[in-house]
Image 1 (spheres, rainbow, N blue to C red):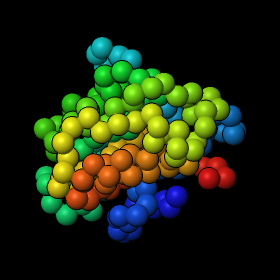
Image 2: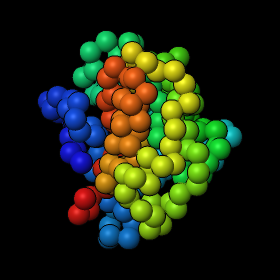
Image 3: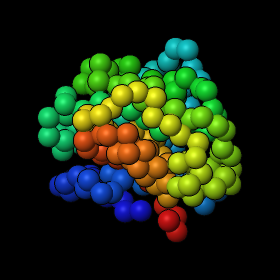
Image 4: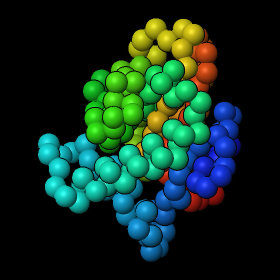
Length: 191
């Protein structure tokens, strides 16, 4: 899988996972502020309401998403935005990405959490689950008619890009006109 860090003047790469930040997991030593913040971002789904610190995290990621990523997408309003579902089947996809979009005036109405669904449970990847694309191809499904549509698939953190690439394959097979992959962060590792 190809990755493209899009901070500064880098253009989007339609064949890569485009991402903003490097993520350093806790188990690999000292974390920088961006890595600590991405963990706080991932936890947003568990809160009913937000305190000031959580609101600052939402504002930070909305600012980077709108100010950097969306500026690189030609006519972003022509796209449907969706997310990679969590590891458990039959969940409502109201995770951190969905929470963020509720505060994003730019894509709130363009986001559809139900385009890609998880049809069977898989082991959590950060807990040692398989990063094979086949695991995702066999556990994800396209839940809506997306023929001829342009789609942006979002994830909070990617390591190998397997779940995002599986989403692209399934969306293209279902007739999507164009698929762009985006993650807020890429794990710094051997992948």
